[in-house]
Image (cartoon, rainbow, N blue to C red; front, side, top):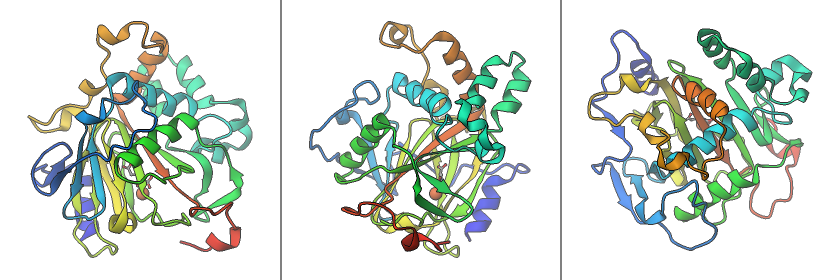
Length: 326
Ligand SMILES: O=C(O)CCC(=O)C(=O)O
Ligand SMILES: [Fe+2]
């Protein structure tokens, strides 16, 4: 059932219908509006709209699955896009490029620097699509499907604060962000069905932030035999897999272009556009960086997928405890 849905949404001819796709922000079943858990704490007012305006839903068909319809300000979206493209693929983080090209990673963010020098837009687009993932905090070992204490970097403090706020609004005040996989998807690409189970604490939420082009996200049950729900994630949308949904199969069968969305479904681009108002001193991003970032997010989707790795009070990973998980 999972694979059938995956193939359906991946197909180009004929392209899939959006008829059964749940649109984050719609108020209808199975989205059930829930109230924010308001406990104060630090608030990143530059990134987020006021919490009173947040539209938070639990997906009734998937207990423990929460979505938040774009809680970001346009400037907030641009800030996290920039972090994802300029900072996160840089040394000492591992990327798919540094993993295969060895020591090149030690010279900083070679990918971004090379991209910045390319003047031909087709060449730039082709080169841009070579970056597919980077890892933050505990660096994920894809071959052995483990995190290791020896490959731990510090987790970006501002991202940690951002996702702690989201977790606490959802009632997970003790969430501790320790690792992230940043996925970079050129339009048309996919992520195969999987569960995330290499973390020692499977009771902590998985938090996912999406920026750029839209995608259909599939989430099923704990076996591939269950029919999944299809959810449209657009720029700024937040998804949290908690409770029973934490260990469910999920996938991204297709990243779409804004232009492929049906009439009446709001485009992503309007969510990060610079307006005259917010190009003032409050937006420090330089024009040159922004035009490259804007060019990138016209053709790609970025997903920041944040995890807690350790159990509460666990000091460090014991290699033998989590080795062998597949
Ligand atoms: O891109 C997404 O929305 C999901 C990514 C994901 O499932 C993962 O990184 O494990
Ligand atoms: Fe995942």
